[in-house]
Image 1 (spheres, rainbow, N blue to C red):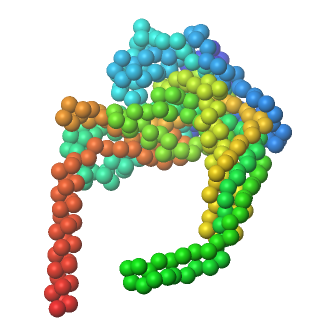
Image 2 (image 1 turned 60 degrees about the vertical axis):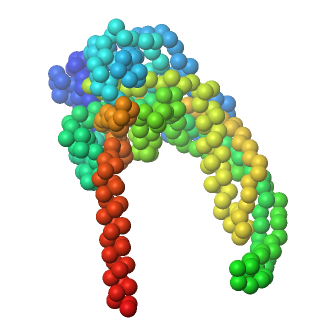
Length: 373
């Protein structure tokens, strides 16, 4: 059981506005210790091999008090703590889930980044986002818009520290001469340039690189939903994550991590190569005509993996047109308040606006011609 450190009670709740736990018996408030406190002095340049936190270990099908239930409405997998509740509401489609729909659970994470944006503030962010787009919104969305249905959800991520080397090879060009030949329509510009083989090597470290560990969200079907908005509200201040305590899930649902370290290695290497290319960018600015990278390699000397829940406020709206449905989402970063999403638009209103703008420009053009004449 998770107990209050002052009185020992187990009736504990999350106070989202402060990101703290509160005992509902003695009103004591506290936070778990920061995950980074144990490794604050760690030298990332000395990382060797693969270090995996207990929560980032390969998923175990063993089921305990923290269960994953499959939503019959949309197929999402929702995690609940059955010590506190026996039912939950899906954060994507708001379908009510019960324990009879349980499926084997993934791993409990190493850490959780508590909510800091309150429900009231999240509702305000969603209202503001939708309000700015009200003019072109579908009328059905405007009538049924209920931002009070914004729900809190923890999204699963792997947070990675790394000690890395990268090599890139390519061809760089420095312009030596520019001239034109021909005239009229046959006029062409020519360039002379010195061409060089370019090789760059860089050693670097990464601290708290976030990787989405839910396969359903990483490989989303944009034909039926817009949940890619989650990536648009990054980054999170993962350095403030606290050690795992199931009490942080009270009143909050969460997605299931369904990808292990081995499955996320390709995504990690892609991101590390991008970082490597950016690290060498300043060293090739002398090649005025640019560098064309033709070969690249990344060597990962050491990594440290931690499974973490990151906080998101989520609003969903199902919209159907011509027998085809689409679920639109508006997401709010539970730490910074950064907001992104999509709403169904009225094509008629868009067309009317386009025609109106076209008419205005046409009228202005005519007026300009008349004045010019």
